[in-house]
Length: 140
Image (cartoon, rainbow, N blue to C red; front, side, top):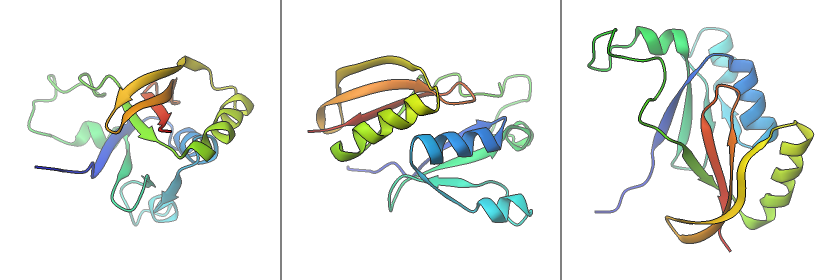
C-alpha cells in the first residue's frame, strides 16, 4: 500500500504568530484565514501541496475535543510527536535560510544530511512559535 500525508493538526496558542511564522518565514500559503477570523471557519490551514495541509487548531478548541480520551488523560499537545518534516525545492533553500535569519529564528540543529522518504537530504530543525519541532529539508 502507498499513501500520502493528508494533513497534520497543530494545537495553536498564538494564531497570529503561527501564521506569520509558517507564511512569512517558512513560505507556506494560508487558507481560510478570513473565514476563521470572522467565525465562518473553526480554524485556518496551511497548504503544503495539492494533497497535504497543516490545520492550525486553536488550543481552546483542541482542549474541548474528546479524541477518544478522558480530559485528564489528554494533554494539550502532541506527546508522541517528536517533529514533522516538510521538503522544499532546492531553489527555495537559500531564501528560506535568509527568512529564518531575518526573523531571528534559531536553527535548533543542522544543516545536516538525513535520510527521508526520498533518500538523503540536507535538513535543519527549527521550533515554531508554539514549540513544535519542524524539520525542513531539500533533496538534490
